[in-house]
Image (tube, rainbow, N blue to C red):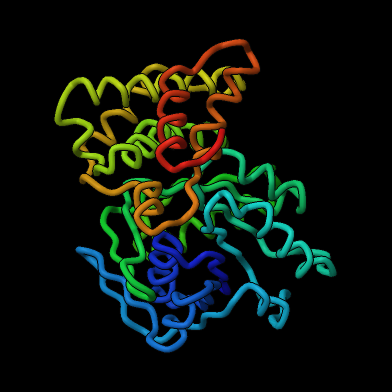
Length: 313
């Protein structure tokens, strides 16, 4: 399969390396010092059960215009959610003459990326996706460190016989590349279940500058995590997403028992990058506000983190 990884950060690079090792044609889109290092030094991925060191194809976003779009089967969007609309506009411009665009898979944080992509492309070409039980970060340009199994769930935003066949083929390819993958007919539910974890620990870890494991060392912090998760589930249900109390408890247990990691917001904070505050916290607050319900846990953590960052709400 011919694949473009748009956003060659930790997760994107890990997936790309796995797919390259499985024999697929993968090109990476990156920028800045990371792009330069990828072009000169190759990609280096270190994982407890997997190591990858090879020269790869890497280029910047503007160079997409030089590629033959008809030869691309899949674009994996692995950028920060903050950049989804900008990336969608670039892709729409590049693919504007294509009667049948490549499939586009979002592997990003948040629950709004797929809807944004659907503003620019037909729903039947958009795949919602999430990966969990993984921590993957750029330690230095071209060098990725990853832990976890990267359990992945994929689902079409609008199903047809043709795109369901592609989805099953893609799941098979991921599994053969040792990325444990399953498909679902309700990807929105799965995206919100991941948001339960993200809203539970991501901003809180950035605020306290601690890894996830620290949050469960004392009951007071664990209770805050649980409160954040409960608010996320309430927000999902307000949008008619089926989230049960058992789902909340399962997500709480999952992150509590997983390796202690630095969530993406903490890593972004340490590297001076923009944080996905609106995409993770804001979406919960907005959803509950629409039904006249407060989100005290999420609003408090969001306000404290923004104050600490010197941002204005």
